[in-house]
Image (cartoon, rainbow, N blue to C red; front, top):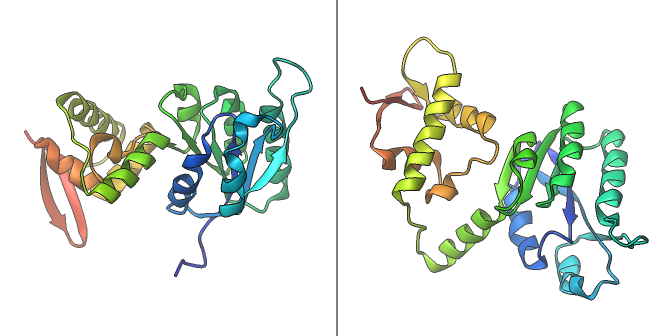
Length: 237
């Protein structure tokens, strides 16, 4: 049973940029952050290329918004989504937004929402520009969502490699350097929040692990200790 105090999110999906087959796992992923109460998907539904969305919209309880391309070369889907987002923002009913798109055109929208003090979670593919990733409070790669689902079904964990391990280590060290404290021991929970603050698109699944503890233990660069109910780590000397 879900807690009653979950934050309420408005989920806005750019159908021009996201395949219908990803909708279900994306919505499931969003429930880790809050309740996807409002679920809208935008596109020109007269376009046959979006036909695969028809059944998905019905199954996932999405509200389809028609945005016809009145002028060749103009992305009416983007404009319509942004206009609706502003209306939703000023309604004051939501704790944040989930913007599902790999399109950098939504960077300004994400920034505007954050200026109002609301949370912005981005969901997109690896091709998503860094500008959009970094303006979000949290950014989740669709590839990680899909690979996690596949790994769960196949019981075959994603493998690490040396390049990914070095990248993960550098990100963790950078987060430690930016967090000021009196000694060298870091609370695992606080460190996790600091890492996401530094890198909104950080996801332990990118490095083949379900959680931060598993990732850090795999690196062999850290010492561990228990401080009450808290797990703490520090870099080995």
